[in-house]
Image (cartoon, rainbow, N blue to C red; front, side):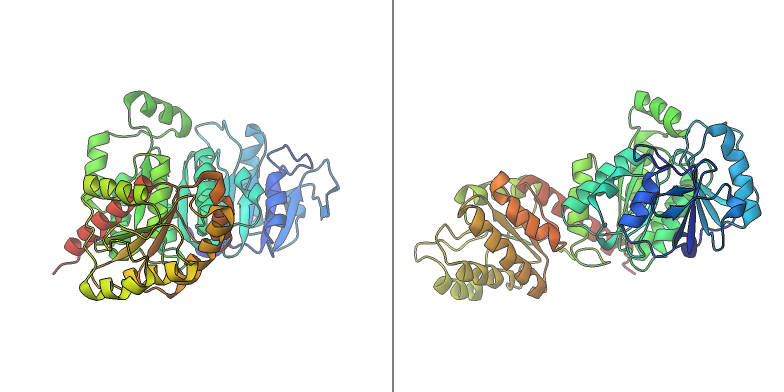
Amino acid sequence: MTRLRPELLRPRGIAVLGASGDPERLGHRPLKYLAATGFAGAVYPVNPRRERIGDLRCYPDLASVPDPVDLALISLAADQVPGALNACAARGVGMAVILSADLPPDLRPPEGLLVMGPNSMGFLDAHAPVAATWNSTLDLGTVRAGSVGLIAQSGGLGGAVLNRLLDRGIGISQAFFSGEERFLDTCDLLELLLDDAATGLIVLLVEGLRRPTRFLELARRAREREVPLIAFKLARSPRSAVAALAHTGMLAGRRRVQQAAFRQVGIVEAETLDVVVDLAVVFAQTPAKPTPFGGRLAVFTTSGGAAILAQDVCDSLGLELPPPSAETVEALRPLLHPWTPIANPLDVGAGLPEGDLLRALATLAADPRIDVVVSINTMIGGRAKLAERARGLLDLAAELPKPLLTCWLGGSLSEEALTILRDAGRPHFLSVEACLGALRAAREYHRRRSLWISP
């Protein structure tokens, strides 16, 4: 099969076969999203019953479309798809994405035409930008560009994870909603992302694998290139495996064998979708590289209860909270209330001037015993104070040589602060347990990686 090339995902022209003027129809959304996200190339709606859709001229067939056409999105009835694929090959189109579902099992694309699908929601490249998709997550508008790649066989689940990643301040490099994967599969897309300089972390939502041996080879390559793979494996029970076979036509495989294989090649496996997003927040803290984390943690908060909670969770997870050095203690004293016990976790209490609070946090972070700092913020100070703190933490995080993770427990009182962080593309957490659990996974990943690369 012809190899998937990066230039095919940054097309000069896109034809939408089965384009529709009805906003509720599948053939309309790619037109909407390509325009909304600023696609710089040409867009050609193909519909013999329409002369125009919005500002775009319609064409009766693919042969009538002017050059260049590098990509075709196919939203047609199942019996029209084979003819559309032949038309793509005759026209010299490099790649087609079949958005339609319920196609016959014996469908075969012409030689030389790369095909994603059927039942695919397409793909997006946030850096180009190209939004060749009908995934409703694009109703959010322009997708923040970043270092996280996403491959999801389920478009609905993939879109939900994409939405949540963006809500947490995480930027995307490319996202693929691959559908049934009869032709291009997860391995093809993973290989492409591993060669993409903008991608430093890859999230996989997998029902089944058509080429498991090749997948494990690519996972080893990801490990060698320091690109973490976070996987959420669906179809883990016998009944859900049957559902996966009906959904994508892929056998799910034995769960224990799959878990052992993932662990052996360095894949970080998430047990829930919440954990998928939490892990991505930790690993995406520095552009295109995993967060360096040796396991030594400092917790900073204005709440005694939050400090105790953090201690409980760290103890249960085996995370190390080293005491501050004598030099750090002395540097902290003039910044804190006289009665504040200096320890780790560090509860500085309420009422500190915001400048002193941030200087104290920076002082704790500078301790050479510490690898990463977590700032836990409750509702103390109210909405305006939390927003002010979010701005201060953004500035501080940009200056610190170590990762600074922020956790916000205040519910709706934290909304303005979270908006500030999200708009700045700064990932954050909403619970202590989620934050520290993801940090433990990062610690284990880097611990295992040090064993893999040892001579």
